[in-house]
Length: 206
Image (cartoon, rainbow, N blue to C red):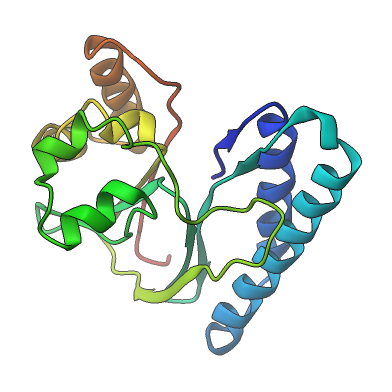
C-alpha cells in the first residue's frame, strides 16, 4: 500500500503500488529482497520524474509498504509511517518501524507512545519516496498457517490503540470482517485522516 501526500499524492501513490505489483510473478525467496529493493528504486524514479514535471505543485511524495509472498516466506518492504502488524497465536506484533520524527524521539526516550499521539510533529516523515534516494526497510518473515497480517495507513494507528486493533483482528472470522471492524473503529474515533486497511490470512496449502 502507498499513502501519497501533497498536491500530487494520489498519482504518486498509484505509481508506487504499480512498481510493487510488477512482482506478482513468482520470485524465488532468495531473490525476494533484491527484487523489492529494485521495485522501490523504480518507484522512486517515477516519483522523481513526476516532481520534475510538476515543479509548481510544491513538495509532495508517498509512503510505500508491502508484503510479497514467495513459498513459505514473506518479503516486507517499508518506507514511511504505514504499519504492518502480525497476529500470531492471539498476540499482536508490530513488525515495521515508523519513519517519523516522533518515533525517533520515542526511541531516544524523549517521548512516550501516548505523548506521541498528540505531538504537533507526529505526521512529519523522515523517510519517504520524495524524488531523492531512499533506503527502504527490507525483511523476510516466515509465513505460518494461522497468521493474520494487517497493513494500515497512519489513519488507523493515529486514533485506534493497539489493544483495540488486536481485539478487532482476533474477533473477526475472516479478513473482510476484520477490515470492516477496523474502519468502524477509526470512524468512531472521529476519522481525522483517511485510512486504508488490508487484512490477509496465511492458510495451509491444499
